[in-house]
Image 1 (cartoon, rainbow, N blue to C red):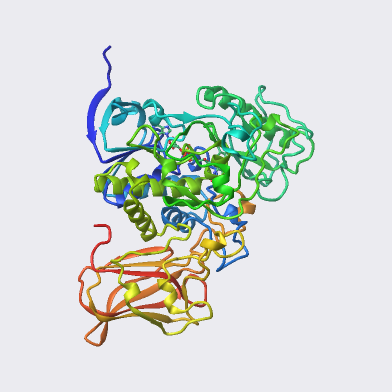
Image 2: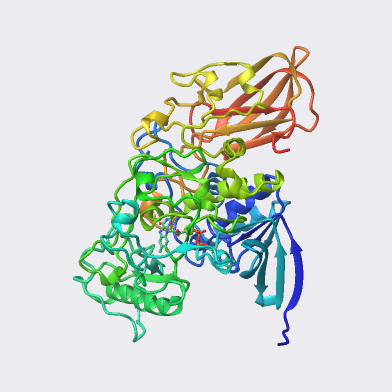
Length: 622
Ligand SMILES: Cc1cc2nc3c(=O)[nH]c(=O)nc-3n(C[C@H](O)[C@H](O)[C@H](O)COP(=O)(O)OP(=O)(O)OC[C@H]3O[C@@H](n4cnc5c(N)ncnc54)[C@H](O)[C@@H]3O)c2cc1C
C-alpha cells in the first residue's frame, strides 16, 4: 500500500516515549548523564496530566504539605532533583499561575539539553524486536507526514498507557488485585478489571456582573443529594469554584484505553452538568462566576501497569520496606477511588489512608521482567493497584523518571543491560550516588562520592546558629527527615543537615591541608522543602505556599573565593539565585588552599543556609 509518509532512520542511546511528568525528567536525567536521548511526545505540549491540556496540579511525597507544613527543619519531604528545579523555576517565572507557562518551562528544559532531541507531535506506535529485545521503535508524526524508525539500546516507556511496552508484548497487569494475591489488606476481596476513572477539569473566574450559563441539552442532571459527599462551591482546597473538581471522575468500569472516546463524551456531560447544577440549581453563590477553560482531553489515572522485576505492593509501602536498589521515594497516601466515580453517590470520592513514612521505590519496578532493554517510569510502573494508588502522583512519577533515566544512562555508558542492576551491586551504588549528586534524596543513603573533596576539608564559618554548625554541609544528607511522618526512625539520620549562619553577611570556609585545583563546585541551598510548592489553580492550595517568588530560605547573592598564596581571589559569583542546586564550573582553575562562600543576601531569611558543598577537581559526570 502506498503512503505519503516519508521514512527516516534515527539512532540514539535511549528512546523515551511519552513526555509527561515521568518522561520529561527521565529524558533530561539520561541526557545530563551522558546518553544521547530522543524524547517522543505524541501531543504538542509536554507535561501529560500537568500540561495545559489537563491542568492537574503536581503533588508528591509531602502529601500536599500535610507531612511537613508545620515541621521546618524536621520533615522535609518535597522531591529534590529535577522536580524541585522545575517547581522553583515555575514559581518564580509564573506568579500568574498560567498553565501554559509550565508547558513552556518543560519545553525549554528539554531544548536546553545538548544530548536530548525532543520530538513533539510524534507518537510511538510500534517496535521491532530481536527475540524479546527491542531493537527499534516506530514513531509517526502525522502533522508532517513523517515516519521514524528509531534505533536505541534502551527504551523507556513513559506513555502512561504503556503503548511502547505493549507493542513489545511486555507483560502488564490491569485492574485490581484480590487481597489474597499480594496479602494486601486494602485490596478487593475478589480481584476485578476495574480501575480508577478519568476526569475533565475546568477553571472559572468571578466577574463583576452576573454571568449566565446555558448548558448544552445533553448534560447530565445532578441534585444536591447526588453530590452530598462531594463538597462544591464552598471555600477550601478542592471545594472552590475556580479550579474544577478531581472527583468529576468516570469510566473506571470501562477500558480506559479502548473506551477513551466514550469516556470523554460522558465526562463532558458530567463536568458541564455539575457546572450547570452550580450555576442554575439553587443558590451556590455562583451568579457572577463563569467558565474560562475546560478540558477536552480526559486526564487518565490508570490503565496498564507493567510487570517488572519487582511488583511494588501495599506492604512494601506501608511497612516502609528498604530496597537496595531504591531510586526514588514516595509518600502520597494509598489513594483509591470508586471505579463508578460520580455515580457512586453513597461513597466518598476517595479513600486516602496516610502512609506512615516516606518509602523506597526500587529500580526493579522500572525494568521489564521479560523484555531486557525495556524500562518504564510513571503511572505504568510495576506495582499492584494499591501500590500504584500511592506512586501515581506526579512528583513521585517525576522522581521515578529521574531515577530510571539516570540508571539507563549508566547502563548505556557502561555497556550493561538494565536487567544487570538486580545483581550488580556496585553499579546500583554508582547510580544511587549519581542521583544524590543531582540532589535526589534516597532514604538512609548518604554521599560517599570519593571524588568530592569537601569531606577532606576543615570547615569553619564566620558565625553559626544552634543546630546549624558549619560541618553540617558534609553530613552526606541534604535535608531533615527525622520529624513526624518523615523517614522511618531507623533510617532518618536526624539533624538539620545544613549550615545556618547567625546573621548576614556570613561566610563559610573549607580549608585543605594541601592545595587543590577545583573545577566544579556544587552547592545545595535550602528551599523550604517542608512547605508544598506546585503550580495549582486552586486558590486555597496556593495559600499554603510561597508561590510566585523565590523561597525565603534560599541564598540569593553570594561570592565564591579561593585562597591563592594567602590572598582571597574571586572564583565566581551569583546574584538573584532561587534554585536549590547550583553548579559552578570554574573556567580558569587554579591551586587554592581554601574555598570561601560569602553570602550577602537571601530571598527573605535573616541568615544564610547551605545544605551541601561539593568540590571536584574534574567533571564528576565524566
Ligand atoms: C483527574 C486526575 C487527577 C489527579 N490528581 C493528581 C494530583 O492532584 N496530583 C498529582 O500529582 N497527580 C494526580 N493525578 C495522577 C497523575 O496525573 C498521573 O498519575 C500522572 O500524570 C502520571 O504521569 P505519567 O508521566 O506516567 O503519565 P501521563 O501524565 O499520562 O503522561 C504520559 C505522556 O505520554 C504521552 N504519550 C502517550 N502515549 C504516547 C505515545 N504512544 N507516544 C508518545 N507519547 C505518548 C502523553 O501525551 C503524555 O504526555 C491525577 C490524575 C488524574 C487523571
